[in-house]
Image 1 (cartoon, helix red, strand yellow):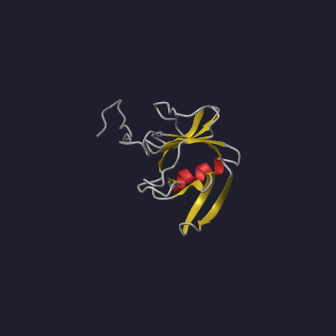
Image 2 (tube, helix red, strand yellow):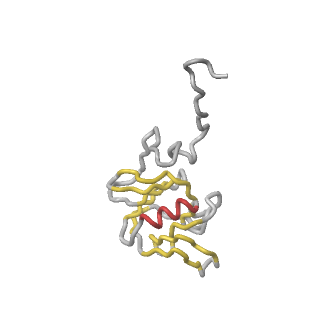
Image 3 (tube, rainbow, N blue to C red):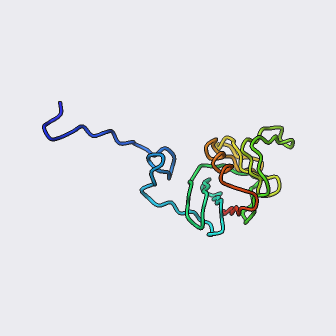
Length: 148
């Protein structure tokens, strides 16, 4: 029974939908998101925390989104790179594996869908939503910054 003058409040969501992201899709995070890259970056990756962002003139427009990167012996190098090309459905002949929503930015290193709980041979593995968002946002020539 509801007392006079009081309405039942909707249940608050216990955890955000993804770490560091907004509580509700389309609503900005309560804590501003800051990425560790320059204003030139369109994509920003931090290897130490397995996070990536999309940027526009230094402002975060997407992220952080979870990633994984190269395992020992196949490390993803830090540095500043440019997107060279992208393919919605790429097949890796080197690893005989699909690379959906592949965005290449450092030779044969690309963002693409893959299990973020496992390290790769150098590529940036992303969730399906993350990879698709990066694929749709980035274009050849865009700056990708990878920080340790």
